[in-house]
Length: 145
Ligand code: FES
Image (cartoon, rainbow, N blue to C red):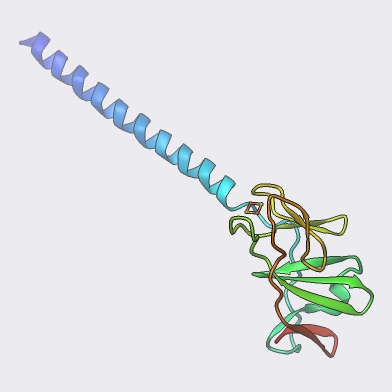
């Protein structure tokens, strides 16, 4: 009788331990997937200043010449002084978001595509340029539309 009670207790302990191990494995898998699927943005615009237009994406002064900033789903670049370009941050390869702007190129880290500041493809696997988004200067801000 003691052996039976001990056996049941040991079986329950083993079953509970297996459940905890399975849960821990699932959490680890979710965490790893989340990091891979949504890389953190490397370049983000500072928040719009109070008092600017309601649809302001960024201040013109915050967009470097020969670079750009990523504001939500929009990339605003300044290829040459005073020329601003709006682009959709959705990569044309498989739909990840462009998250880095380095050395005058917009980079999608999912598979390594790079785009020029005008959205043209510099390095594949993407074959099509980034879609443009209308932006304009209003005062000292860049606004959508
Ligand atoms: Fe951007 Fe593949 S989704 S390179």
